[in-house]
Amino acid sequence: MKGMKPFRSAAYLVSLFALCFGACDDPGSQPVPAPGPGPGPGPAPIGSATDTTTPATTPPVVVGNHGYYVDFESGADTNNGLSTTSAWKHCPGDANATGIPRSTPLSAGDVVTFKGGAHYCGTIHLVFNGTTAMPITYNGNSSGNWGTGKAVIDGEYLNQDARRYGFVTDSSVSHVVIRSFEVLHLGGVANLQNYSNQPLPYSPGYGVYLRDATNVEVRDCYFHELGVWANSRPASYEIGLGGFGIYAFGVDGLTVANCEFTRMEKGIRVSPGQVGQNKAARRVLITECDFHNHMRWLVEISTSADNTTLDDITVSHCRLHDFTEFDSGVWQGAGVCPHTDGIILGVSDYRNRTYGTIRLHSNHFYQDATQGGGTAMIFSTGMGGNVQIYNNVFVNSLHGCGAIYIQDGPIPGHGDTPINFEICNNSFYDGRYAVLLRTVTGGCNVGDGNITILNNAFCKAVGDAAFSVVVFDTNSAPKVVDYNCYYTPRADQLIMMRGPQGYATLADARSKWSWETHGMVADPKYADISQGVGVNSSRNNLHLTGNSSCINAGTNLSHRFTLDKDKFQRSPTQGWDIGAFKAP
Image (cartoon, rainbow, N blue to C red):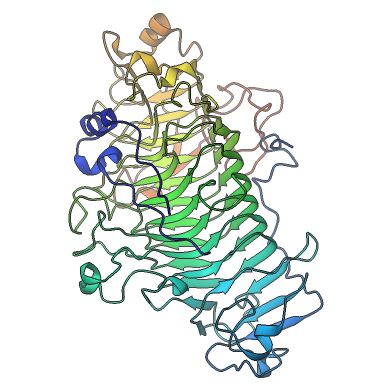
Protein backbone atom coordinates (compact mmCIF):
# COMPACT_ATOMS: atom_id res chain seq x y z
CA MET A 1 0.00 0.00 0.00
CA LYS A 2 1.26 3.42 -0.85
CA GLY A 3 2.57 5.23 2.24
CA MET A 4 2.27 8.84 3.23
CA LYS A 5 4.45 11.21 1.27
CA PRO A 6 7.43 12.62 3.16
CA PHE A 7 7.64 16.10 4.61
CA ARG A 8 7.81 19.05 2.34
CA SER A 9 11.29 19.98 1.16
CA ALA A 10 15.01 19.65 1.75
CA ALA A 11 15.01 23.10 3.32
CA TYR A 12 12.70 21.70 5.95
CA LEU A 13 15.44 19.37 7.14
CA VAL A 14 17.97 22.00 8.04
CA SER A 15 15.94 25.00 9.09
CA LEU A 16 13.99 23.56 11.97
CA PHE A 17 17.16 22.03 13.38
CA ALA A 18 18.63 25.48 13.79
CA LEU A 19 15.52 26.75 15.48
CA CYS A 20 14.71 23.86 17.79
CA PHE A 21 18.23 23.05 18.99
CA GLY A 22 18.73 19.46 17.98
CA ALA A 23 18.23 16.87 15.28
CA CYS A 24 15.75 14.98 17.43
CA ASP A 25 13.52 18.04 17.45
CA ASP A 26 13.52 18.38 13.66
CA PRO A 27 10.50 16.74 12.04
CA GLY A 28 12.07 16.99 8.63
CA SER A 29 15.00 14.80 9.64
CA GLN A 30 12.74 11.91 10.50
CA PRO A 31 11.37 9.29 8.11
CA VAL A 32 7.60 9.10 7.98
CA PRO A 33 6.70 5.39 8.02
CA ALA A 34 3.85 4.12 5.90
CA PRO A 35 0.68 3.45 7.84
CA GLY A 36 1.01 -0.27 7.30
CA PRO A 37 -1.35 -2.60 5.50
CA GLY A 38 -5.07 -2.11 5.93
CA PRO A 39 -7.90 -4.65 5.93
CA GLY A 40 -9.15 -5.73 2.92
CA PRO A 41 -23.93 21.59 4.98
CA GLY A 42 -20.92 23.64 6.86
CA PRO A 43 -19.99 23.60 10.54
CA ALA A 44 -22.10 25.22 13.22
CA PRO A 45 -20.93 28.52 14.75
CA ILE A 46 -18.42 27.89 17.50
CA GLY A 47 -19.94 27.58 20.94
CA SER A 48 -23.49 27.85 19.61
CA ALA A 49 -26.35 25.63 20.64
CA THR A 50 -25.75 23.44 17.60
CA ASP A 51 -21.96 23.29 17.93
CA THR A 52 -20.80 19.72 18.48
CA THR A 53 -17.82 20.78 20.59
CA THR A 54 -19.72 20.56 23.87
CA PRO A 55 -20.97 16.97 24.18
CA ALA A 56 -24.12 15.97 25.96
CA THR A 57 -24.13 13.79 29.05
CA THR A 58 -23.08 10.20 28.43
CA PRO A 59 -26.04 8.67 26.59
CA PRO A 60 -27.78 5.56 27.86
CA VAL A 61 -27.28 2.28 26.05
CA VAL A 62 -30.08 1.90 23.50
CA VAL A 63 -31.38 -1.66 23.44
CA GLY A 64 -33.26 -2.74 20.35
CA ASN A 65 -34.51 -6.15 19.42
CA HIS A 66 -31.71 -8.17 20.96
CA GLY A 67 -29.16 -8.08 23.72
CA TYR A 68 -26.30 -10.53 23.25
CA TYR A 69 -23.50 -11.53 25.62
CA VAL A 70 -19.89 -12.50 24.93
CA ASP A 71 -17.40 -14.11 27.31
CA PHE A 72 -14.30 -15.17 25.40
CA GLU A 73 -12.85 -17.03 28.37
CA SER A 74 -15.89 -19.09 29.40
CA GLY A 75 -18.50 -18.74 26.64
CA ALA A 76 -19.22 -21.09 23.74
CA ASP A 77 -20.41 -20.46 20.20
CA THR A 78 -22.93 -23.26 20.65
CA ASN A 79 -24.79 -21.13 23.22
CA ASN A 80 -27.65 -18.82 22.22
CA GLY A 81 -25.82 -15.73 23.54
CA LEU A 82 -28.97 -14.28 25.12
CA SER A 83 -27.82 -14.19 28.75
CA THR A 84 -24.66 -14.03 30.83
CA THR A 85 -25.04 -17.73 31.60
CA SER A 86 -25.32 -18.69 27.92
CA ALA A 87 -22.76 -16.29 26.48
CA TRP A 88 -20.97 -16.74 23.19
CA LYS A 89 -17.22 -17.04 22.95
CA HIS A 90 -16.98 -14.87 19.83
CA CYS A 91 -18.77 -11.74 18.72
CA PRO A 92 -20.66 -11.65 15.41
CA GLY A 93 -18.25 -10.18 12.89
CA ASP A 94 -15.22 -12.05 14.25
CA ALA A 95 -13.79 -14.22 11.47
CA ASN A 96 -13.11 -16.95 14.03
CA ALA A 97 -16.73 -17.15 15.18
CA THR A 98 -18.47 -20.45 14.60
CA GLY A 99 -21.97 -21.77 15.11
CA ILE A 100 -24.65 -19.34 16.22
CA PRO A 101 -22.66 -16.04 16.38
CA ARG A 102 -21.24 -16.72 12.92
CA SER A 103 -24.73 -17.00 11.45
CA THR A 104 -26.32 -14.21 13.52
CA PRO A 105 -26.44 -10.77 11.87
CA LEU A 106 -26.75 -7.78 14.16
CA SER A 107 -29.70 -5.45 13.59
CA ALA A 108 -30.33 -1.79 14.44
CA GLY A 109 -30.52 -1.32 18.18
CA ASP A 110 -28.77 -4.57 19.08
CA VAL A 111 -26.32 -4.48 21.99
CA VAL A 112 -23.46 -6.94 22.37
CA THR A 113 -22.18 -6.88 25.96
CA PHE A 114 -18.74 -8.27 26.78
CA LYS A 115 -17.83 -9.58 30.22
CA GLY A 116 -15.81 -7.13 32.26
CA GLY A 117 -12.21 -8.17 32.87
CA ALA A 118 -12.35 -11.03 30.36
CA HIS A 119 -9.73 -10.88 27.61
CA TYR A 120 -11.21 -11.09 24.13
CA CYS A 121 -8.46 -12.47 21.88
CA GLY A 122 -9.86 -11.71 18.46
CA THR A 123 -10.67 -8.99 15.93
CA ILE A 124 -14.19 -7.63 15.59
CA HIS A 125 -15.11 -6.62 12.05
CA LEU A 126 -17.68 -3.83 11.96
CA VAL A 127 -19.95 -5.14 9.22
CA PHE A 128 -23.42 -4.39 10.63
CA ASN A 129 -25.22 -1.04 10.42
CA GLY A 130 -27.50 0.63 12.92
CA THR A 131 -29.65 3.73 12.52
CA THR A 132 -29.60 7.20 14.04
CA ALA A 133 -32.08 6.28 16.76
CA MET A 134 -30.96 2.67 17.10
CA PRO A 135 -27.19 2.23 16.72
CA ILE A 136 -25.45 -1.09 17.07
CA THR A 137 -23.56 -1.05 20.36
CA TYR A 138 -20.50 -3.04 21.39
CA ASN A 139 -20.49 -2.62 25.16
CA GLY A 140 -17.52 -3.59 27.31
CA ASN A 141 -19.48 -3.73 30.58
CA SER A 142 -20.32 -0.04 31.00
CA SER A 143 -22.78 -0.82 33.79
CA GLY A 144 -20.20 -2.84 35.72
CA ASN A 145 -22.79 -5.53 36.38
CA TRP A 146 -20.99 -8.43 34.71
CA GLY A 147 -17.43 -9.22 35.63
CA THR A 148 -14.89 -6.66 36.82
CA GLY A 149 -14.08 -3.40 35.08
CA LYS A 150 -13.88 -3.04 31.32
CA ALA A 151 -13.80 -5.93 28.88
CA VAL A 152 -10.33 -6.29 27.35
CA ILE A 153 -9.55 -6.53 23.64
CA ASP A 154 -6.15 -8.25 23.68
CA GLY A 155 -4.01 -8.79 20.56
CA GLU A 156 -1.47 -10.77 22.59
CA TYR A 157 1.37 -9.08 20.66
CA LEU A 158 0.85 -11.58 17.82
CA ASN A 159 2.76 -10.48 14.74
CA GLN A 160 -0.13 -11.42 12.46
CA ASP A 161 -2.16 -9.11 10.25
CA ALA A 162 -5.44 -10.61 11.43
CA ARG A 163 -4.62 -9.87 15.06
CA ARG A 164 -3.32 -6.32 14.77
CA TYR A 165 -6.81 -4.79 14.91
CA GLY A 166 -9.29 -4.50 17.75
CA PHE A 167 -12.29 -3.18 15.81
CA VAL A 168 -11.99 -2.80 12.04
CA THR A 169 -14.15 -1.83 9.06
CA ASP A 170 -13.80 -3.90 5.89
CA SER A 171 -16.01 -1.53 3.90
CA SER A 172 -18.59 1.12 4.80
CA VAL A 173 -20.32 1.06 8.17
CA SER A 174 -22.75 3.41 9.92
CA HIS A 175 -24.29 4.12 13.33
CA VAL A 176 -22.03 2.08 15.59
CA VAL A 177 -21.08 2.65 19.24
CA ILE A 178 -17.95 1.17 20.84
CA ARG A 179 -18.06 1.71 24.57
CA SER A 180 -16.12 0.87 27.74
CA PHE A 181 -13.31 -1.35 26.43
CA GLU A 182 -9.69 -1.69 27.40
CA VAL A 183 -7.67 -2.26 24.22
CA LEU A 184 -4.06 -3.44 24.38
CA HIS A 185 -1.20 -5.50 22.89
CA LEU A 186 -2.14 -5.04 19.24
CA GLY A 187 0.93 -5.17 16.99
CA GLY A 188 4.37 -4.88 18.50
CA VAL A 189 6.23 -7.82 20.02
CA ALA A 190 5.92 -9.49 23.41
CA ASN A 191 9.68 -9.57 23.95
CA LEU A 192 11.27 -6.31 22.87
CA GLN A 193 14.66 -8.02 22.56
CA ASN A 194 13.28 -9.96 19.59
CA TYR A 195 12.05 -6.79 17.91
CA SER A 196 14.91 -6.35 15.43
CA ASN A 197 14.86 -10.03 14.48
CA GLN A 198 11.20 -10.37 13.59
CA PRO A 199 10.35 -11.17 9.94
CA LEU A 200 8.14 -8.07 9.97
CA PRO A 201 9.75 -5.81 12.56
CA TYR A 202 7.36 -2.98 11.76
CA SER A 203 4.19 -4.41 13.26
CA PRO A 204 1.64 -1.65 13.79
CA GLY A 205 -1.43 -2.18 15.91
CA TYR A 206 -4.81 -0.45 15.58
CA GLY A 207 -7.35 -0.21 18.38
CA VAL A 208 -10.14 1.03 16.10
CA TYR A 209 -9.53 1.19 12.33
CA LEU A 210 -12.17 3.05 10.32
CA ARG A 211 -12.78 3.74 6.65
CA ASP A 212 -15.99 4.90 4.99
CA ALA A 213 -17.56 5.21 8.44
CA THR A 214 -20.63 7.30 9.23
CA ASN A 215 -21.80 8.24 12.73
CA VAL A 216 -19.44 6.12 14.80
CA GLU A 217 -18.91 6.76 18.50
CA VAL A 218 -16.01 5.53 20.63
CA ARG A 219 -16.57 6.30 24.29
CA ASP A 220 -15.07 5.50 27.70
CA CYS A 221 -12.27 3.31 26.31
CA TYR A 222 -8.68 2.85 27.46
CA PHE A 223 -6.10 2.28 24.69
CA HIS A 224 -2.56 1.36 25.65
CA GLU A 225 0.52 -0.65 24.71
CA LEU A 226 -0.11 -0.73 20.97
CA GLY A 227 2.70 -1.37 18.50
CA VAL A 228 6.24 -0.80 19.77
CA TRP A 229 6.16 1.93 22.39
CA ALA A 230 9.04 1.30 24.80
CA ASN A 231 11.73 3.93 25.30
CA SER A 232 14.59 1.42 25.27
CA ARG A 233 16.81 -0.48 22.87
CA PRO A 234 16.38 -2.08 20.42
CA ALA A 235 13.17 -0.11 19.73
CA SER A 236 13.89 2.02 16.68
CA TYR A 237 11.95 4.85 15.11
CA GLU A 238 13.56 4.10 11.74
CA ILE A 239 12.28 0.51 11.78
CA GLY A 240 8.90 1.64 13.05
CA LEU A 241 6.82 2.07 16.19
CA GLY A 242 3.34 1.94 14.75
CA GLY A 243 0.72 1.81 17.47
CA PHE A 244 -2.53 3.71 16.84
CA GLY A 245 -5.45 4.04 19.22
CA ILE A 246 -7.93 5.16 16.55
CA TYR A 247 -7.01 5.33 12.87
CA ALA A 248 -9.67 6.99 10.70
CA PHE A 249 -9.61 7.52 6.95
CA GLY A 250 -12.88 8.70 5.38
CA VAL A 251 -15.44 9.46 8.11
CA ASP A 252 -18.63 11.50 8.30
CA GLY A 253 -19.53 11.73 11.95
CA LEU A 254 -16.98 10.37 14.44
CA THR A 255 -17.13 11.06 18.17
CA VAL A 256 -14.33 10.02 20.52
CA ALA A 257 -15.26 10.90 24.10
CA ASN A 258 -13.75 10.26 27.52
CA CYS A 259 -11.05 7.90 26.25
CA GLU A 260 -7.48 7.49 27.47
CA PHE A 261 -4.47 6.93 25.20
CA THR A 262 -0.93 6.02 26.29
CA ARG A 263 2.04 3.91 25.20
CA MET A 264 1.66 3.96 21.43
CA GLU A 265 3.00 6.00 18.54
CA LYS A 266 -0.18 7.99 17.83
CA GLY A 267 -3.35 8.31 19.85
CA ILE A 268 -5.73 9.35 17.06
CA ARG A 269 -4.98 9.78 13.38
CA VAL A 270 -7.62 11.33 11.09
CA SER A 271 -6.30 11.24 7.53
CA PRO A 272 -8.76 10.72 4.67
CA GLY A 273 -7.78 9.64 1.18
CA GLN A 274 -5.46 6.68 1.19
CA VAL A 275 -8.04 3.95 1.83
CA GLY A 276 -11.75 3.70 1.06
CA GLN A 277 -14.26 5.56 -1.10
CA ASN A 278 -14.91 8.56 1.17
CA LYS A 279 -12.09 11.06 0.66
CA ALA A 280 -13.25 13.40 3.41
CA ALA A 281 -13.25 13.60 7.19
CA ARG A 282 -16.20 15.63 8.47
CA ARG A 283 -18.05 16.09 11.76
CA VAL A 284 -15.26 14.71 13.93
CA LEU A 285 -15.35 15.42 17.67
CA ILE A 286 -12.54 14.39 20.02
CA THR A 287 -13.46 15.51 23.51
CA GLU A 288 -12.68 14.96 27.18
CA CYS A 289 -9.87 12.54 26.35
CA ASP A 290 -6.53 12.03 28.09
CA PHE A 291 -3.34 11.60 26.00
CA HIS A 292 -0.05 11.01 27.79
CA ASN A 293 3.31 9.23 28.06
CA HIS A 294 5.31 7.24 25.52
CA MET A 295 3.70 8.79 22.47
CA ARG A 296 5.00 10.52 19.36
CA TRP A 297 1.99 12.41 18.01
CA LEU A 298 -1.01 12.54 20.29
CA VAL A 299 -3.49 13.66 17.61
CA GLU A 300 -2.80 13.88 13.88
CA ILE A 301 -5.17 15.64 11.49
CA SER A 302 -3.89 15.30 7.95
CA THR A 303 -4.67 14.05 4.45
CA SER A 304 -3.28 10.98 2.70
CA ALA A 305 -4.24 11.64 -0.95
CA ASP A 306 -5.07 14.36 -3.46
CA ASN A 307 -8.61 15.81 -3.68
CA THR A 308 -9.43 15.29 -0.02
CA THR A 309 -11.39 17.30 2.54
CA LEU A 310 -11.02 18.07 6.24
CA ASP A 311 -13.95 19.98 7.72
CA ASP A 312 -15.83 20.46 11.00
CA ILE A 313 -13.21 18.74 13.14
CA THR A 314 -12.94 19.56 16.83
CA VAL A 315 -10.49 18.64 19.58
CA SER A 316 -11.82 20.04 22.84
CA HIS A 317 -11.58 19.67 26.62
CA CYS A 318 -8.75 17.16 26.38
CA ARG A 319 -5.57 16.79 28.42
CA LEU A 320 -2.40 16.40 26.34
CA HIS A 321 0.60 16.01 28.56
CA ASP A 322 3.77 14.30 29.77
CA PHE A 323 4.97 12.81 26.49
CA THR A 324 8.69 13.52 26.74
CA GLU A 325 9.94 9.91 26.62
CA PHE A 326 10.71 10.04 22.89
CA ASP A 327 12.34 13.49 23.03
CA SER A 328 15.99 14.43 22.61
CA GLY A 329 17.93 13.93 25.81
CA VAL A 330 15.31 11.47 27.04
CA TRP A 331 15.10 8.92 24.18
CA GLN A 332 16.85 5.64 25.06
CA GLY A 333 15.91 3.67 21.95
CA ALA A 334 18.11 2.82 18.99
CA GLY A 335 19.01 5.45 16.43
CA VAL A 336 17.55 8.91 16.04
CA CYS A 337 14.62 9.79 18.25
CA PRO A 338 11.17 10.60 16.86
CA HIS A 339 10.02 14.20 16.84
CA THR A 340 7.04 14.65 19.09
CA ASP A 341 3.99 16.91 18.94
CA GLY A 342 0.76 17.27 20.84
CA ILE A 343 -1.54 17.97 17.89
CA ILE A 344 -0.05 17.97 14.40
CA LEU A 345 -1.89 19.39 11.39
CA GLY A 346 -1.13 19.12 7.69
CA VAL A 347 1.95 16.87 7.56
CA SER A 348 1.74 15.64 3.96
CA ASP A 349 2.25 17.10 0.48
CA TYR A 350 -0.77 16.55 -1.78
CA ARG A 351 -2.95 18.64 -4.10
CA ASN A 352 -6.44 20.10 -4.28
CA ARG A 353 -7.27 19.74 -0.62
CA THR A 354 -10.27 21.47 0.87
CA TYR A 355 -9.75 22.62 4.43
CA GLY A 356 -12.82 23.81 6.30
CA THR A 357 -13.13 24.60 10.00
CA ILE A 358 -10.90 22.86 12.52
CA ARG A 359 -11.35 23.83 16.17
CA LEU A 360 -8.73 23.18 18.83
CA HIS A 361 -10.21 24.60 21.98
CA SER A 362 -10.45 24.32 25.75
CA ASN A 363 -7.60 21.82 26.05
CA HIS A 364 -4.91 21.60 28.72
CA PHE A 365 -1.34 21.12 27.45
CA TYR A 366 1.48 20.58 29.95
CA GLN A 367 4.64 18.66 30.81
CA ASP A 368 5.37 17.74 34.42
CA ALA A 369 9.06 17.44 33.60
CA THR A 370 12.29 19.42 33.45
CA GLN A 371 13.70 18.00 30.22
CA GLY A 372 12.09 17.47 26.84
CA GLY A 373 12.28 18.33 23.18
CA GLY A 374 10.06 17.78 20.19
CA THR A 375 8.55 20.46 18.02
CA ALA A 376 5.40 22.00 19.54
CA MET A 377 2.23 21.33 21.46
CA ILE A 378 0.30 22.36 18.32
CA PHE A 379 2.28 22.10 15.08
CA SER A 380 0.79 23.08 11.72
CA THR A 381 2.86 22.40 8.62
CA GLY A 382 1.55 23.23 5.16
CA MET A 383 -1.99 23.39 6.50
CA GLY A 384 -4.72 25.72 5.32
CA GLY A 385 -8.34 26.39 6.19
CA ASN A 386 -10.00 28.01 9.17
CA VAL A 387 -8.05 26.64 12.13
CA GLN A 388 -9.36 28.12 15.37
CA ILE A 389 -7.15 27.75 18.45
CA TYR A 390 -8.88 29.19 21.49
CA ASN A 391 -9.52 28.77 25.23
CA ASN A 392 -6.49 26.49 25.66
CA VAL A 393 -4.05 26.42 28.57
CA PHE A 394 -0.34 25.85 27.88
CA VAL A 395 2.08 25.24 30.75
CA ASN A 396 5.74 24.20 30.40
CA SER A 397 5.62 22.91 26.83
CA LEU A 398 9.37 22.05 26.73
CA HIS A 399 9.21 21.84 22.92
CA GLY A 400 11.94 23.53 20.91
CA CYS A 401 9.40 25.51 18.90
CA GLY A 402 7.16 26.26 21.84
CA ALA A 403 3.43 25.93 22.34
CA ILE A 404 1.97 26.84 18.91
CA TYR A 405 4.13 26.58 15.80
CA ILE A 406 2.79 27.49 12.36
CA GLN A 407 5.24 26.47 9.63
CA ASP A 408 4.51 27.02 5.94
CA GLY A 409 1.24 27.61 4.19
CA PRO A 410 -0.04 25.45 1.35
CA ILE A 411 2.17 25.11 -1.73
CA PRO A 412 1.22 27.69 -4.39
CA GLY A 413 -0.50 26.19 -7.39
CA HIS A 414 -1.53 23.01 -5.60
CA GLY A 415 -5.13 24.14 -5.21
CA ASP A 416 -5.31 23.88 -1.41
CA THR A 417 -7.45 26.16 0.77
CA PRO A 418 -5.27 29.04 2.07
CA ILE A 419 -4.51 29.81 5.70
CA ASN A 420 -7.10 31.52 7.89
CA PHE A 421 -5.92 30.83 11.45
CA GLU A 422 -7.20 32.40 14.65
CA ILE A 423 -5.27 32.16 17.94
CA CYS A 424 -7.51 33.70 20.57
CA ASN A 425 -8.13 33.68 24.33
CA ASN A 426 -5.43 31.20 25.27
CA SER A 427 -3.49 31.28 28.55
CA PHE A 428 0.25 30.59 28.62
CA TYR A 429 2.69 30.05 31.47
CA ASP A 430 5.91 28.85 29.96
CA GLY A 431 9.61 29.31 29.41
CA ARG A 432 9.40 28.69 25.66
CA TYR A 433 7.80 30.49 22.75
CA ALA A 434 4.04 30.86 22.92
CA VAL A 435 3.42 31.44 19.19
CA LEU A 436 6.01 30.92 16.47
CA LEU A 437 5.33 31.68 12.80
CA ARG A 438 7.80 30.62 10.13
CA THR A 439 8.09 30.05 6.39
CA VAL A 440 10.61 27.34 5.52
CA THR A 441 9.67 26.25 1.99
CA GLY A 442 10.06 28.91 -0.69
CA GLY A 443 6.73 30.34 -1.81
CA CYS A 444 4.72 28.72 0.99
CA ASN A 445 4.47 31.98 2.87
CA VAL A 446 2.58 31.83 6.14
CA GLY A 447 1.92 35.54 5.78
CA ASP A 448 0.06 35.09 2.49
CA GLY A 449 -2.87 33.83 4.52
CA ASN A 450 -4.68 35.44 7.42
CA ILE A 451 -3.42 34.87 10.95
CA THR A 452 -5.12 36.63 13.83
CA ILE A 453 -3.73 36.69 17.39
CA LEU A 454 -6.16 38.21 19.91
CA ASN A 455 -6.99 38.16 23.64
CA ASN A 456 -4.14 35.87 24.73
CA ALA A 457 -2.44 36.00 28.13
CA PHE A 458 1.30 35.48 27.61
CA CYS A 459 3.09 34.94 30.91
CA LYS A 460 6.77 34.02 30.79
CA ALA A 461 8.16 31.99 33.67
CA VAL A 462 11.80 32.84 32.97
CA GLY A 463 13.70 35.85 31.70
CA ASP A 464 15.47 34.32 28.72
CA ALA A 465 15.11 35.27 25.07
CA ALA A 466 12.20 32.96 24.31
CA PHE A 467 9.77 35.61 23.19
CA SER A 468 6.04 35.26 23.55
CA VAL A 469 5.38 35.86 19.84
CA VAL A 470 8.07 35.12 17.26
CA VAL A 471 7.67 35.98 13.59
CA PHE A 472 10.71 34.21 12.20
CA ASP A 473 10.76 36.00 8.84
CA THR A 474 8.98 38.80 7.02
CA ASN A 475 7.08 36.24 4.91
CA SER A 476 5.25 35.00 8.00
CA ALA A 477 3.79 38.17 9.49
CA PRO A 478 0.29 37.85 10.97
CA LYS A 479 -2.42 40.23 9.82
CA VAL A 480 -3.77 41.10 13.28
CA VAL A 481 -2.02 41.08 16.69
CA ASP A 482 -3.95 42.96 19.36
CA TYR A 483 -5.60 42.89 22.79
CA ASN A 484 -2.95 40.53 24.18
CA CYS A 485 -1.40 40.73 27.65
CA TYR A 486 2.35 40.20 28.10
CA TYR A 487 4.16 39.54 31.36
CA THR A 488 7.85 38.73 31.32
CA PRO A 489 11.02 39.68 33.17
CA ARG A 490 12.34 40.96 29.82
CA ALA A 491 10.04 43.80 28.79
CA ASP A 492 12.28 44.55 25.80
CA GLN A 493 11.64 41.11 24.32
CA LEU A 494 7.89 40.62 24.05
CA ILE A 495 7.71 40.12 20.28
CA MET A 496 10.36 39.38 17.70
CA MET A 497 10.31 39.94 13.95
CA ARG A 498 13.34 38.16 12.55
CA GLY A 499 15.65 40.35 10.52
CA PRO A 500 16.41 44.05 10.77
CA GLN A 501 13.32 44.70 12.88
CA GLY A 502 14.61 42.48 15.69
CA TYR A 503 13.29 42.50 19.23
CA ALA A 504 10.30 44.63 20.09
CA THR A 505 8.73 46.21 23.10
CA LEU A 506 5.02 46.91 22.98
CA ALA A 507 5.73 50.44 21.78
CA ASP A 508 7.99 49.07 19.05
CA ALA A 509 5.30 46.66 17.88
CA ARG A 510 2.86 49.54 17.58
CA SER A 511 5.18 51.87 15.72
CA LYS A 512 6.85 49.30 13.43
CA TRP A 513 4.03 46.94 12.55
CA SER A 514 0.81 48.55 13.81
CA TRP A 515 0.30 45.67 16.24
CA GLU A 516 -1.04 45.77 19.79
CA THR A 517 -2.88 49.06 19.64
CA HIS A 518 -4.87 47.78 22.62
CA GLY A 519 -2.31 45.34 24.00
CA MET A 520 -0.71 45.72 27.40
CA VAL A 521 2.17 44.71 29.61
CA ALA A 522 0.73 43.58 32.94
CA ASP A 523 0.70 40.74 35.42
CA PRO A 524 -2.36 38.65 34.48
CA LYS A 525 -2.70 37.73 38.16
CA TYR A 526 -3.16 34.03 37.65
CA ALA A 527 -4.70 32.33 40.67
CA ASP A 528 -1.59 30.26 41.45
CA ILE A 529 1.71 29.85 39.60
CA SER A 530 3.72 28.95 42.67
CA GLN A 531 4.70 25.58 41.19
CA GLY A 532 6.73 27.19 38.41
CA VAL A 533 7.68 25.18 35.35
CA GLY A 534 8.90 21.69 36.13
CA VAL A 535 7.68 18.49 37.71
CA ASN A 536 4.57 20.13 39.19
CA SER A 537 3.59 22.29 36.21
CA SER A 538 0.07 20.88 36.06
CA ARG A 539 -0.67 22.14 39.56
CA ASN A 540 -0.55 25.77 38.46
CA ASN A 541 -3.92 27.49 38.22
CA LEU A 542 -4.26 29.94 35.33
CA HIS A 543 -7.70 31.26 36.26
CA LEU A 544 -7.77 35.03 36.69
CA THR A 545 -8.12 36.61 40.11
CA GLY A 546 -10.48 39.50 40.77
CA ASN A 547 -7.82 42.21 40.47
CA SER A 548 -6.39 41.09 37.13
CA SER A 549 -5.79 43.74 34.49
CA CYS A 550 -7.01 41.20 31.94
CA ILE A 551 -10.63 41.58 33.04
CA ASN A 552 -12.74 43.26 30.34
CA ALA A 553 -9.52 44.19 28.51
CA GLY A 554 -10.03 41.98 25.46
CA THR A 555 -12.14 42.44 22.39
CA ASN A 556 -15.53 40.75 22.14
CA LEU A 557 -15.40 37.65 19.92
CA SER A 558 -18.92 36.38 20.50
CA HIS A 559 -19.41 36.23 16.75
CA ARG A 560 -16.81 33.42 16.82
CA PHE A 561 -17.43 31.59 20.13
CA THR A 562 -19.30 32.31 23.33
CA LEU A 563 -17.96 30.09 26.15
CA ASP A 564 -14.72 30.03 28.13
CA LYS A 565 -12.63 26.94 28.89
CA ASP A 566 -14.87 26.04 31.83
CA LYS A 567 -17.96 26.36 29.61
CA PHE A 568 -19.07 29.58 31.31
CA GLN A 569 -20.82 32.14 29.13
CA ARG A 570 -18.74 35.12 28.08
CA SER A 571 -20.33 38.54 27.71
CA PRO A 572 -22.35 39.00 24.51
CA THR A 573 -21.80 42.77 24.48
CA GLN A 574 -18.93 43.91 26.74
CA GLY A 575 -15.18 43.53 26.45
CA TRP A 576 -13.94 40.02 27.15
CA ASP A 577 -11.50 38.85 29.76
CA ILE A 578 -8.13 38.01 28.24
CA GLY A 579 -7.06 34.37 28.40
CA ALA A 580 -8.84 31.04 28.52
CA PHE A 581 -10.97 31.74 31.58
CA LYS A 582 -13.66 34.24 32.37
CA ALA A 583 -12.88 35.94 35.67
CA PRO A 584 -15.12 35.08 38.65
